[in-house]
Length: 456
Image 1 (cartoon, rainbow, N blue to C red):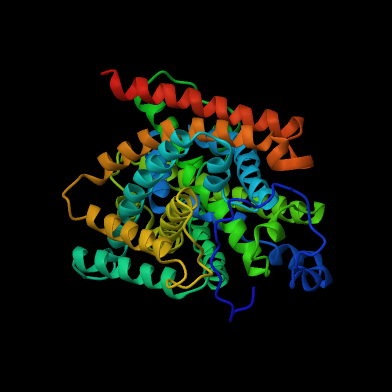
Image 2: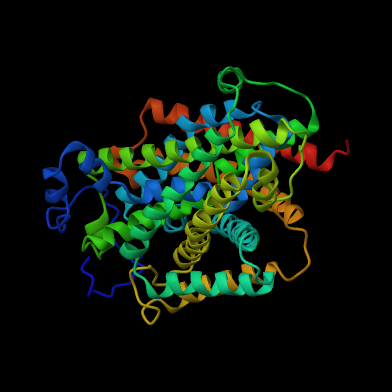
């Protein structure tokens, strides 16, 4: 949509479910310009929600999890980043395709086709996990900044919260998306940090290609934590919500204008999601390499947070690695916290039929922005409750781990429902990948319950 237009995404309860492209739909104003570019520039031009989802997946809490995996077990968990990549691509593309074809976000689609208790349970769990994770991310950003700036932690926490709120409330979706795509580049700092660590290439290759199987409860716990931070429900809701926002930015304000997707649109989104998810796992891989080659090798097998990992690198590799690690924490925090709060706002708005959208002004979508503000304030307040952030993240991981399998089941049922998807239902490959990821996460959830409840 044009920069001057102020439009909220309005609920359309009685709109027909016709998941095909209508002839009167506004054309994508940027499509011709992208088509004229050379292949490389064309590829950059179509990157959007998928790239942002991939970068947001490596939030400060995720960085802390990957750093802990490397510190505790060296390169033994690298194989997880390779194994989960194709499943991540399949699931995130599924979310994108559902939104592109139905014209709605996930919560709106679930609300229309499934019992309300399922929707309410999923959304409540999502909001709880997002608040805890956003709070931990804000705390991690403050910790990273404090390594170089002698500013009191409470001041940093409040300042970060206010700055991120201003970004979400004042900027429009297309402006936010451009900022986020540039912020994703900060994650490349971890690749440089890994190179500075001079890892054993043969050991890295073994850890990547040969799965390490162990019944050690600590190893099982870190495997589940890595899976939980990699396949996370908030990315499902963000991906779908961002797709609807992206359609609105092209002038497709009504549901019938957003419904349906051309082969080219789906092909472009598959490219976008594939690059985003590869980028996510590429960075996760090098975080594990960096801490495995340094902290684990030096016997520092336990760290409390991503900021702790950054600080611990100084005597081992030098201040450059610490700086790079901190840049990654701060950059991805600025990207991930708004994604967390926006995904909650998307889900709640669609659940209760509120006008919503980052393209709309607060006056047109007051409850949507009110949810974002309350989520940010709650996340900030989390840091002043005296709760151990690691314990809180464990709780968030438990809730997220239990939440992910049923949401994946709903995604698969939606993706195979012709009333919603028309001719764009899943093929055999997507069904194998989708149900395979559901099975992996269900096994992980069971293992999570066992390792959490059974003393060891």
